[in-house]
Image (cartoon, rainbow, N blue to C red; front, side, top):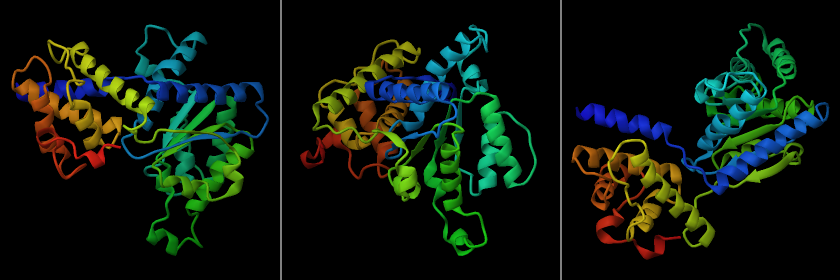
Length: 324
């Protein structure tokens, strides 16, 4: 039965959604970019960016946007029945296209990735595929393209050796820029912090950035960010009960739990979720009615050391210099 408890917890964590102001502000910006597309379709387009450390909640921000506002819009336009599953509509709708550059190394890959997201089967050379992208984006009325994992534009040594002969990464960044300038579609670029210079080493693209959306680590020393972090913990503790994992609400705000979790996660909510997920498995196996401090402590030992931190603040207390 232990496997099924763990499987249930893992599945529930895939389904948990926690909204905060930062997330909703980003959703507003995505909406505004789409509005510009509708109101001035022929004009050159601009972009927004989210550059932040891994596990800061960037991809979740997009996921929740697709599942809420974009799905609402798709239903309102009569594109899908309102009793259809939201995640299904989110994956089938073509109002906002979401692509990931993980395996994208050439412009041709990029075009294929966009066409796949548009649900278009196509063969051809790079130019033909790009033209198909443009044509379908316009024909389908795509209002926004979100490009995730842009750090994968970094040329590898292997590739930079042949960069003269190949369409290398500068080519992909350039293609994305040309798409904006041709007025095909506004874009949101998402990546780890270092990716900013990869994409915006060139002023022409930098000048097109309307908004840089902050998703950086939450700083415990800044009241508003500390509140956001604490609110996240409070919600997460409630969600564990709401999703049927525990009989009682887990109080993740008890005593020094927030400080300890902040230090271990480095202020990144994605890592908080991973630690609490591990703690939930430990708590469920122990037959506990909720997640307790002792389970969080065990989760840090089991999962976070040395992955995220080299000591466990739960038994020893937080090393004060680190709580920033």
